[in-house]
Image 1 (cartoon, rainbow, N blue to C red):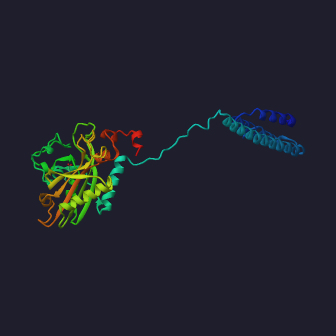
Image 2 (image 1 turned 45 degrees about the vertical axis):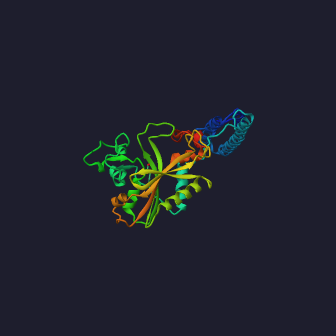
Length: 346
Ligand code: PHE
């Protein structure tokens, strides 16, 4: 079979001109250079030619192949540059935002917990975590909370199983405060010790602007020989100065907790109104931030510390409360809604 190479050259050049895109380029390549393409066909037919014709036809086939390759390279450039100019002309809008990734950050409550713990760490405390699922023994009994205390009621604490009144100490519950952390630490460590225990606590409260069924506390415990109430006052005053401000005013109000004696609640002068009285502090000018006191001897007895050898101070602080005061947040529920517009402000 004879090949009209002039005609083939023309055909190749014309077809190459018509190539518009990458797909067209590939079809062209397959048609001419593919395994079953024209050039392979010509090479295969060489075997049937008379000996003397072979070199000339082979050479022309090679030239044709070079032409095809050159044409393809040129069209490839043309296709690419037309893509570029489409982008420039705006058919492809390169100014459209890409798929961006924003930097994350710690939740505001995590930040406040870290800051409170950090402040106590600077004062020589270590941070320790304690279980959220507790037994009635750790949450109540060891803390000298009497068996008939209302907080043991199923309306005031989340029990995880049917309450067994025969063996109350073994009942499993969600801790209602971080104070069981005191017991867990003293069971495993000997004084002197100074520890803070941050974490979640749970109470079946109706949810409103200042109550949630889950919130965070930070427990503090310092035990040594000769720890006095003045140490408690000094420590908490220093904490408030460092955490809130130098000129913060505080007051210790006598209170009752079964696991501390004497006990107090600590108020700070209202951050919002500066003590004049506003809606946040209920016109009192003071805001309660924590409960505290000197560790009750019955608590030392529960952890088998030698009688009369040690004294200690303890406190329990509400994290949401403190965060709301520091940042002027008026509704506790917003902490848990995962609304990025709120969270990204901190
Ligand atoms: N556990 C107490 C509460 O939740 C706070 C507290 C802790 C009081 C330690 C005194 C000492 O209200």
